[in-house]
Image 1 (spheres, rainbow, N blue to C red):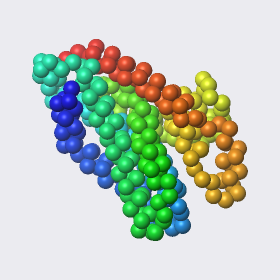
Image 2: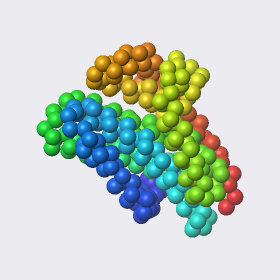
Image 3: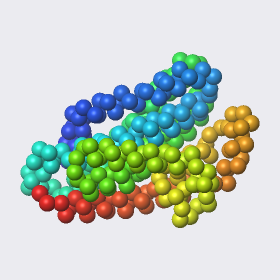
Length: 257
């Protein structure tokens, strides 16, 4: 399994979109630095986490997954791998592990850029370990949030164009939902605010923001009763992730070589 993971990582690094993904991690930290001249370390990092994760990392993970899961099919090398022997279950787990590593690394790269900007602007690095931990955990949650869409990509098994279409609608649907009070301001239970990944992640992250000004403070106070505890957020997302991984393995095992 270790050698298989190293092999997948090497293939992953050779993809052109991998380089784009690395460069994309710099976009929002630099953009926010240009717009926000007066901010603290927490607000810098929360902006990096939110923008990088939900607008860039989510679609990148799904497009990268399409590349990873289609590469053997495109190059007709799956038969060779299965003769090693390597099971399809192992392939799925290793590919998802590569995506998890990329997700956390992407977030940490944004964190490093945000930290460098804070140092350059003489912003005190208050709560550095806490902000670092939040960034790592957000990377894990975004990976889990991408899995339902990756299931669809594997199931359809058609083309990269269809994958991009699925990515667009899934990312847009999730991101738009977090602006809706009707979805976000719901108690924990069987509802879209709890079961949809991005609204749930926002309900968890919002409690760590520091409101600035009366408007933000009023919203924070009104929304505080709907915050998702860490245990609930991770419980829901990781349970959904486990179901998605099971479905991926099942779909991949039934695919004809």
